[in-house]
Length: 224
Ligand code: ADE
Image (cartoon, rainbow, N blue to C red; front, top):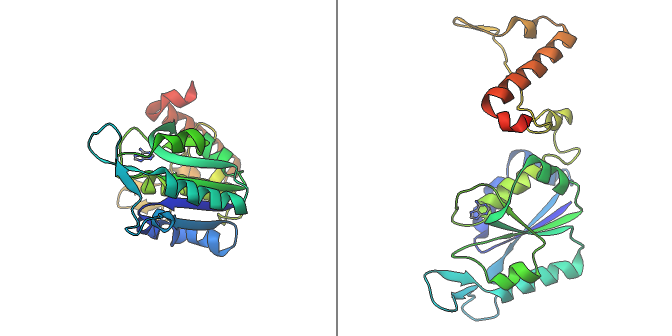
């Protein structure tokens, strides 16, 4: 998969893609992440990418031209399954959306900034709008990193133990069961006996029960 992220502040995306699982996925050649600086597509000498809003009002608006130029130059070279705009008024990100997007060939992710972007970008260039939650971030970069992380880890071969993404919370509308590691007893706090019994069938049943119990208590809405 190839992911092209378009941003006015590309430095904000440096660290999420340069460590741990996301870095390894790129090193293994499973995913190629390209970050594009919107300023490189500005046609004026000041390299400006925003302007005042028509009709007045506070805040600058990202201009259509640099975004149009960047997206069209990418589309000339690659086919994209979706051109996604990160915005608080988009569809709320869920495991279901990440699962679907992990099957894409290539994706463009556009990060918003300042007071917004020229609406014509959304009308004519964007195919999907995603929010990571009902709160407003300073820009779409951190949201884009969250979206890409949730997608990339689902691509086969990215996680060492492929089953570990399948047993994530939300994958079957259940929260993941609790996990423990050595020592089996720390001060007075003991690990549930069943987990050290060696009985794999019983352990699997226990985990499933705990998942249901936890989901009923913490997220009953998931069971509806
Ligand atoms: N940009 C600013 N806030 C955002 C959010 N909550 N989700 C996605 N993109 C955003």
